[in-house]
Amino acid sequence: MARQPSYFISHGGGPWPWIDDMRAAFAPLEASLAALPGELPEPPAAILMISGHWEAREVRVMHGARPPMIYDYHGFPPQTYEITYPAPGAPVLAERAASLIGAAGLPVALDPGRGFDHGAFVPAYVMYPQADVPMFQVSMLESYEPEAHFRLGRALAPLRDEGVLILGSGLSYHNLRQFGPAARAPSEAFDAWLGETLALTPEARTARLLDWESAPHARSCHAREDHLVPLFAALGAAQEGAATRIYHQEMIFGGVTASSWRFD
Image (cartoon, rainbow, N blue to C red):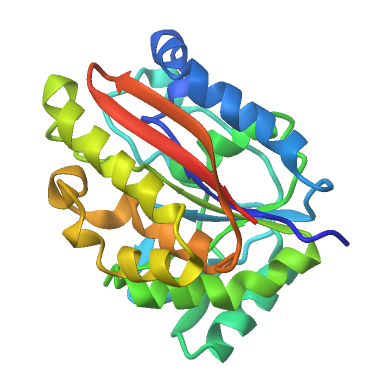
C-alpha cells in the first residue's frame, strides 16, 4: 500500500459550493480540491479530517458508521441546511487512530455521535462528490497548543502507510471581523511568511511554526488560531516531508490571500 501525503487545505467560506456567487469566487479553490484525488498515489482507504470547526478538552475521534450532518454556519440560504454528504464513517480506523493518539500520551476518547462539520464535508464534497470514500474526523485540543498538535500529527503518521489521507482543514487567514481591503496587507504578509517557513528544513520550519505568533500580522490574521492549528497536525503527520503549495488565491472577499499545501 502506497504512503499517502498529508495536506493543509483551505475550506473556503461556509457552504460555498452550493451558492452560485460564492462558488464563482472560489473557483481556484474548487479546481485545487477537485484535482487533489488525482495527485494521490492510489485511492485512499479513508479520509481523516482535522477541521478548524471541532475542538475539545481531549482529542475526540469520530466513531460513528453513518455520521450525521452539522450545519455550523449562520445566515445562509435555507437549502444549505438540507445538504447531505452521506460518506460512511470508518469506525475500525477510528479505533486505530485513538490507540495511536493514546500511545503518544495525549488524552483521547471515541465519539460515536459526532457529525461532519462544514470544515469536513465542504472540501470532501468537492474532492469526492459521490461520497464514496469513508471519512472520519479527529478534533483539535481546545488549548490550541502548537506542540501538542505536532505530537497529534506524529501519532497519526503511521496511518498514512495504511492508506489514510490526512487533511488539516482550515484557512491560512481567518479573521471574521476583518475582511475586504483591510485584510489585504495582513493576509499577504502572513501567507508569504508561511510560504517561506514551509520551504525551510523540517527542523527550522517546525521551530518557526511553534513560535507562529512572531509572524507578521499573526494575530490580525488569526485572532483565534482554530483555523491555523490543523496545519500543525497535518505537518506533524509528514514532519520530514517536502511542502508544496497546491493553491494560492488573492483578493478573496475583496482582500484576503490564502494558500493550501501538500506534505510528502
